[in-house]
Amino acid sequence: MSRKEKAPGASSRGATLKESSHIHSQDRRSFLRGGTLLAGATVASAAGLTGARAQRLEIPPSGKEMGHIIEAEAYGMPSKFEAKVKRRRTDVLVNKQNWSDWSMTPLQSQLGIVTPNGLFFERHHAGVPDIDPDHHVLVIHGMVKQPLKFSMSDLMRYPSVSKFHFLECSGNGLTDWTKAASKTVQQSHGLLSCAQWTGVPLATLLDEAGVDPAAKWALFEGADGSTHARSIPMDKVLADTLLVWGQNGEMLRPEQGYPLRAFVPGWEGNVSVKWLRRVKIGDQPWHLRSETARYTDPMPEGKWRQFSFMMECKSVITRPSGGMKLQGPGSYEIEGFAWSGNGSIKAVDVTLDGGKNWREARLEEPALDKCLTRFRYTWNWDGGPAKIASRAVDSTGYVQPTVSDIAKARALVGFVQHHNGVFPWSIGQDGEVKNAIV
Image: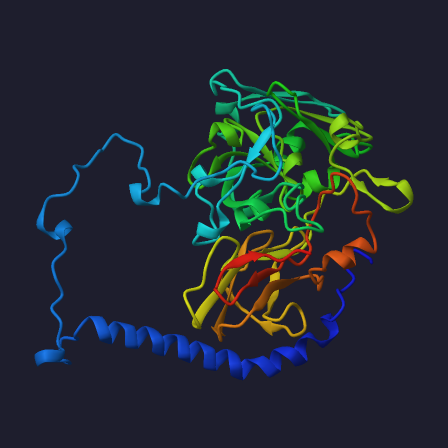
């Protein structure tokens, strides 16, 4: 299957969506009516119920006493009642050391497209270095007219830009290709987050250095103990690659590359090298361990694809998802995220019957380039078994494939990355939601 070939069933998408529009609006009205009845049963309106039917709205204990004092010099923290919302390490792969590992974003609890900095997923190869920004240096050298050396204060004098983009590890979903290994969406898809990134376009600095016309690649190298490095084509470097120091309105956290990282929009997370110390310009890739023995894709007939940079169009339902339980028949909002490294999201379909029929979900603005997009679908669950999933379409017309579609073009053996297949959840008669990969 070509990388832009539509998945089976994509050609009939328009007809199935028309058939579902009436059902969709009915479900929405039913959901809203349910909320109105609930409100009317618990609280009397100012001009409405009186006498025996009226119920008194009690003043809560919090309204009868002073709250906590203002901590003007403290860093604000979430409520203690949200303590369970946190990053978690993998429950599937057992790692016996702490230096090269990852922690995952609780997507089931993320309310908008921006991931809070304290919940942004992590991936490290040699732990998290503690770097003093006053002593950090970035060097640009190689095939340039004049090598350049920058301190952080030098870099931050350049005109900066702020962009909203997702970041996804190429290993996101690698444990759930053909079997239900992960129990929650945090475990299956939690190597995904989204932020507003602030920094300077790398092209600005390279223009000052004067790149040799024969240069075709750039090397990004980090200052961590693994000296993690990746080769990046110059076309992408000049198009939209950033050198960032800011994330969601504050300086990068140490685990996100403080004080400086590369950010390559839409591409696999490992190329956005953290703790960036140098950019070397050359005429060919460096063929490092990280791009020969690692971060490559198995292909048919024993071959391997060396560079699979882009994170293709993808989506997942986050609510209801694994580990949750529906509380009886009725109206529910199916919610999730869609994203594409090749553009913006144009549509998301939802299935309630394991892919036999697809219905159009509502996209929530903004639908930005290379950014998470929220989608919703109002569902009137009848209490019977169901199998739900989502399927995204991006601005190039690419339709998110199934795992069986991907298997026609790639070999699903070993440590397989770049999983952008449709991901299903099953719902039992008791309302329990489980991973439905088979």
